[in-house]
Length: 245
Image (tube, rainbow, N blue to C red; front, side):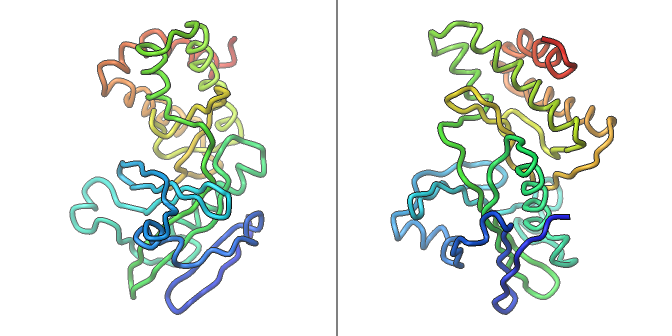
């Protein structure tokens, strides 16, 4: 079990893993309006969980606000039931990220989390280190097939590397709860990373991992261009995932 440092201010909790607990993470750093006023925001990313790219003390971080998805989002966009600090979303994600990072797996470095409790519910945010030069697998493949003039073997290599990297995670029982083409990043060295480990966990069995791979395949089929690419790339990915070349 990973130890996380906790600092409480009333019903607000700041949590951080030991590897980054020396950072002075104040409440302002979780406030996009304050960050924008200070000129610290360098970009944003939209999705179910909005993200802000910030630069602070010569470091680049990603701030993500936890939001609900599916039917629960119709009742509350970003409030979660309080069932204890250790079962909160940022605590669990920081714990998983810390363990995966300690094993040398390609995940973002966890920085800190904030929980703002209000009686029986809470809102939350998480901060991780930004992966330099990274873009989503979807964006990488779109550029590789339709924009770049690079050797096709480069894109084939990324398909294979994606399969190999996922196999590394699954070999130690790591389960990504939302494995899709937006949560897989490719950096400028064509290294593959898995991000957004909200609801991720360890000690997952083969059945859960198989469902995770099926989820990834479905995410490729939701866009016509990606589905066209996947007809060629998916067999390469699955060959590497299975231990092939």
